[in-house]
Length: 155
Image 1 (cartoon, rainbow, N blue to C red):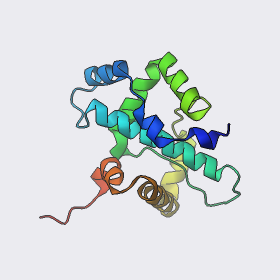
Image 2: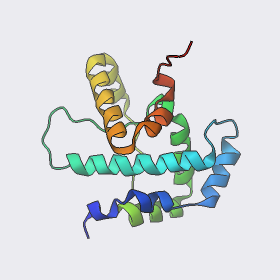
Image 3: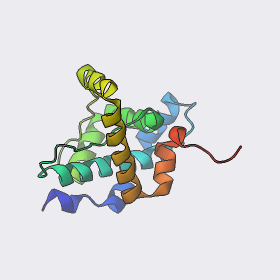
Image 4: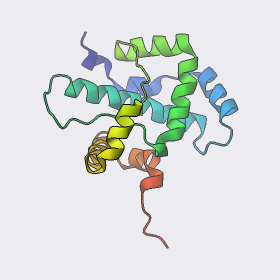
């Protein structure tokens, strides 16, 4: 069975873990996303990140982009941290739905410096990521993940 077959978003979204939800509520009582919404958004992020990784795996493009958790997605990242500390559940979930362990790898200081020094390139990469999110998960997801960056027309 190929990894691409394992990437079934509906199956991933059907996964639940009450212990992780309870821990998120306990650790982050002031977050605006409910535990259920944060968990759903994390499932979507993991699915989309792996989908993108598999699509780019064989391409030799020099201007590739990758999935990224921006500051606006802090609460989704909080849920990821919560899920990861449930190591047995997270490991089993990763292998069952993605065929491998999904690492949470932050950008290195060197990578962050490079991004800061080439702002135009960084903006282009982020724009590609946001467009990819929109194309694969729609407007609602873009609004949740990038809410703080969106400008309202209302005054």
